[in-house]
Length: 608
Image (cartoon, rainbow, N blue to C red; front, side, top):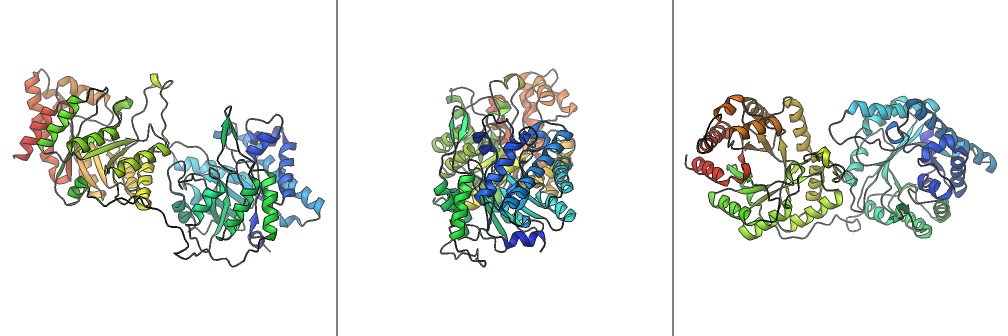
């Protein structure tokens, strides 16, 4: 019998529990990184493996979850030693246990454990990061590993290529892929867990898919009740519970009875691999093993659950409402949105007067930046609520990834949706200035593409009234092919409207034409009135993403305020005319709260 068939013959298969938290809590003087204990505290790791085997685990994981150069900040040689020792220790534990208990060594399994390698959200070199995973995989393969578990993942990047690589190298390998989701069903990077395992389950190079870590068994049971992956082996390895933090240390309650009983419920939904993650101990595995021995599990369990029994995703029950701006945009009528940055203080009267003036001038929506250039201003969402409810103006809210984690983003989106504020511009956000980084910490839990995907999932799973997802498009990028590729990826993530950077050059117009041919989304052409020579120089030299031709800049040289204002209107109208047939609407950016100039532009454009 080959390796894969031997594993399948042992289903339902019981795995071990936590290594990191158990090592920390059970050893008198644990090392900061338990992977280093493979070298410097071998006996402790060996004994933990044996404890799990004695408790009844049929499969154990190598102590190598964080064994990568980025996590351990170590050299290639040290990493190779850690990986080799992790594999040898696990196999030594299996050999000793089987010899002591007169068990066939082929009836116990060692899985090479590989956790996520941290990488920047964007941009990153796909090939470079894939090679880091391949280097780790190769080290295990050279040692004779046939079984792999990729766990606590928050995205599926690299996975399919990596698993195909393993299967090509070792045809008889068994590969488990496991994602970490919060109680809402999302990973830390905002991906919907159900979608992730549905996507990877289609691969013939992956033997089992499932979830581990972050959530306790009760939350994961709610998720698994909604999933149908008929024909794929499902793996579940939850945390003991939600942790408690005491004196900056993470603790988990001893709930082994509840944990073990709940894990048995997974078997009724066709889960065939069960184990445990953070906060669990051999005690948890021992109780699961005893219950498993008494559990009558059919080898022909169907994961196909009737529609009456399967839990459906709960959509927010709100009355269906029109999205005035988005509906007009889809009707092929030219729309006009004006950006009006919120105040940096509580003096709101002038802002509201300006917004009211823009409404009278005929704008379809006002866009509200989210703390532009990383400087605090009145919150864009609260400002949107005020405009909509007090002035009956359609707001378009900028949301950056800089200042909010996943929880804060979801909370905000829920509130916006129930208030029918549903037009969004998703941007990664300007970086915090270096001088302020000690006091102000950026979040960047995800980038604009991932946040767009997250909102798209909310549209599908929760919202009765969908949010309009839009993003930025830098038509001034020198390598516009790369920018266009990013835009296409954003479209796949759910973006349906692009607001361009300022169009004030021939290159910008050329790239706009290119984008119109390549993209499926609606495009809002960005126009900003240039109000002085100094203003033109500043924008061209200091504002990222803006490019103004020298010929235009020179026109302002020596001009008075009155003549500069007139020139600002003329040049803006000229560019609006040139791009009118290439865009679905105009996105006018108000310079220094000069609403009077925007009004003049709109007046002349509408009366042409």
